[in-house]
Image 1 (tube, chains in turn blue, green):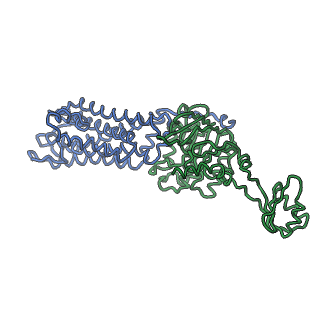
Image 2 (cartoon, rainbow over the protein chains, first blue to last red):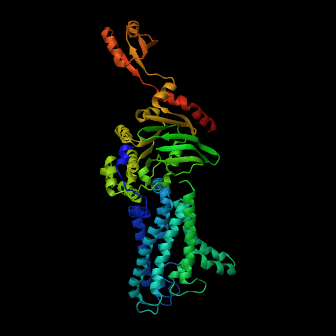
Image 3 (cartoon, rainbow over the protein chains, first blue to last red):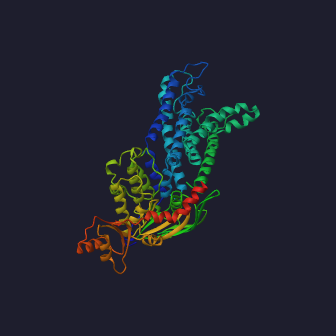
Length: 270
Length: 303
């Protein structure tokens, strides 16, 4: 190997390198920009529209079903459910897309230790999704506030728990993104990942109504979207967890999905 | 150097690779041959650690692939199936891979130029032709300046110019002292570049030999076909030690032991007009099919 050995090369597989590579991969796909843009738009637009259409004492809350119109934060976060879908689906796509395109073979050939891949994807997408949605939540609040300034429910951004709720929305949605990544890596299929994600976040909470009340009361607060959503609520409501407890429970769900994904990545052929 | 030692791979009850054992050495091109479904791709996947062997061991440059500090510097692989995201540009694809192993941007530009992709480097890979996709795969394989280059069906989809390019590239890499291994189901194509042949069928090793030895074993020698109206006279003047002449049809001779040039010169010296003089191509394909016949037939029965 005369010639080859004579050229000293300092290439090295490092976690830093894996993160840098994932960063490049993430931003070099049009779908990343579009989906993040859509998440931001949904959060801001729906939040502002909810504030715009708010009528005190109206029987129906403005915005999509589930909107909490009892305070300004609830109105500003009216778009959070839609944003969670956009962010979660993007998470599934950046993970399962590796498998559907076959890219995973090139990726694993470059990173045969495998696990750094899942941590790098988690880190990058978790942070990006958190930043984008936290900014979106704050923007929705700041832009919506003047529209309801005369109302009883109006609040300043410095109000008690306001910033915690808005940044909490970013934390929750960032974790939803990671949840998507974990499900995508675990199931290795975009369709499967999205189905499970939507099922767990949106459909299962609705199904608890079929259970006996005593069961439902005990289970409902611990379901992923209910637990995670608690951190976005300005006031802790009865029958839901405290903001940080709720977020921790949701982080637990995400951790379980990540552990399953890591196990499958290390143990099975790709 | 790739060392495959008693490797077996089973999927459920199906044995795809069966106690396979061979070595691909530095400085030579190893052709990895077998009919479709022989287990070539699976073996290559095991070499770069995508699949784990059920038993046996595979090492690249003395270590398990995953144990290397810079995997892409040890082995660069092109797998048969596509392994790029169609929405990304060729440049982003290569740069994303390069960063994981700490390979500088400069090297990305180098391999893009080497593969002749400069003009399309910023285009989305989804719009690439089969041949361009293949060139991108080869560029990715060379990214880490690897000691071992392993390509699965590298000339698939390439035009004649591309085929020639791959051939020259691979012999150049081997001449630099690298280990080059390429798989194919086409014997004639492989024989043009390979120094060494590893033939498998149904996951088992059928031959681990040189091209010449394989042809000799199969009992098919090179020969010259000569056509002349004076065939009988030609036969007499060609006769000599180590030369055998047979006649297959009237006015036609099959000569072995002499080159076409020698036959032509002898005929000229003796004023014998020829109307045909051709080297009968050694039918490598025949040798290959002879070798793998059992494997193929069994496959058909089983299917």
